[in-house]
Length: 128
Image (cartoon, rainbow, N blue to C red; front, side, top):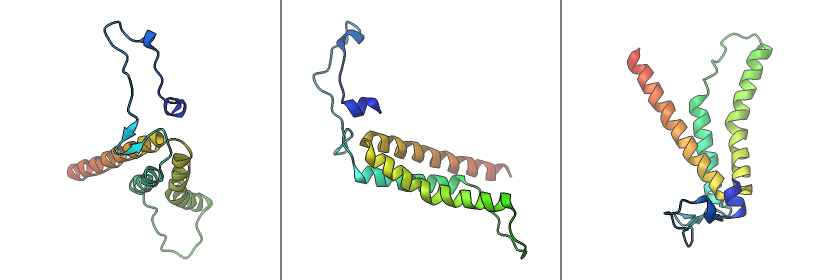
């Protein structure tokens, strides 16, 4: 994070003698400057976070009886709702407040988590 916050600066004393210091570093990724804020990447980070949470949280079974939910069941239900709907907005806010590099990190991380979740689900179905 601090690399993109302060800008990309190099100390040539940290390089091996056979490695030359690059004249410039390009911080643009698909036309988006990663040092600046990007609403598009922030929104994509929030959307990917929503789908990642939606896939990873266990489904809360619906009660068929008329008796009220216990404190633990009510707490779990409320926590699921908060994580599913509020956390993606928090990710959007943080991603837009900080540089686009953080949003890109969240997007890639969420996509790997979604892929892993789908892979594990498919493998567990094959084992049953």
